[in-house]
Length: 149
Image (cartoon, rainbow, N blue to C red; front, side, top):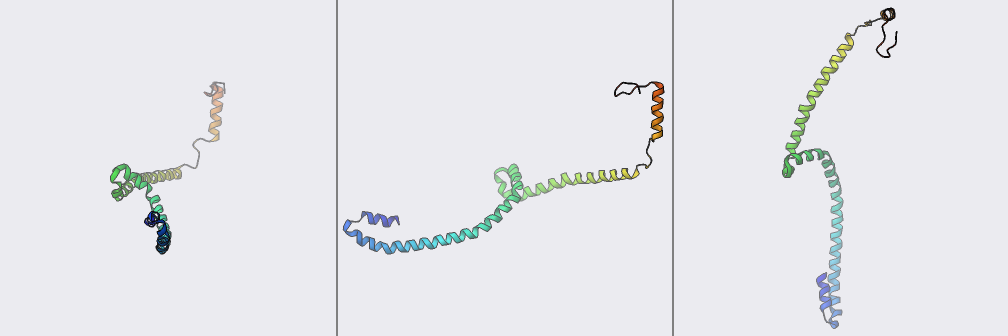
């Protein structure tokens, strides 16, 4: 297009009509090609959108792995994502599995301790009343407010 405009601008004034007529067909052909190419670009962009959406979803899932790979491998991270995934899995296995086993052991011990509790209280009301009477007779004071019982 620029070349056609240049030819039109540099031609003699008496030749401009002839050059313009000759270039009209060329310009129309170029404009038709541009319209076809724009339509193809629009079609390709429409095909690209679902693929980009899938790529963004995958990047969101791999975000922490990419971060770890960048932290460990630096510049070579893109070729080492599979190693980073292995490291994350191994870390989860060696850190959280022992914690889960400890949680099971502790909960089992707590359930066992609850089942073994005596149904009869260790100190009954009669013993508490006898202790209060003994404290009053002996003149003992409580440690909380330092006054006689």
